[in-house]
Length: 74
Image (cartoon, rainbow, N blue to C red; front, side):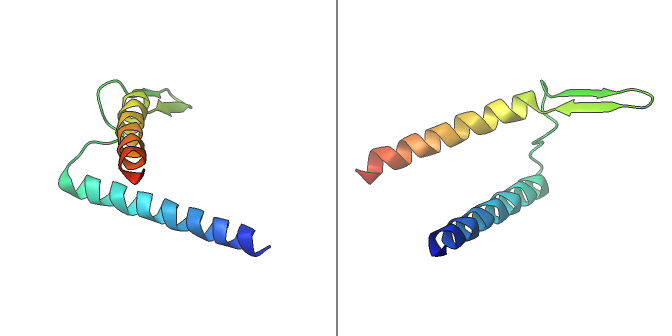
């Protein structure tokens, strides 16, 4: 049970850190979530938003970070 608690605490801290980074990026003027390539549709009664370009950018950045971390961690 203690391992589950530690895992949940680590995930919570990770989410809090990700939120802080996104808030800091917004203050710097980085348009995460409003990049060209993000799909947004607003109809009369429905709206749909899919951040395609933002997802791809974050995926590339995280892949590079994890690659560099694993490369230098050895």
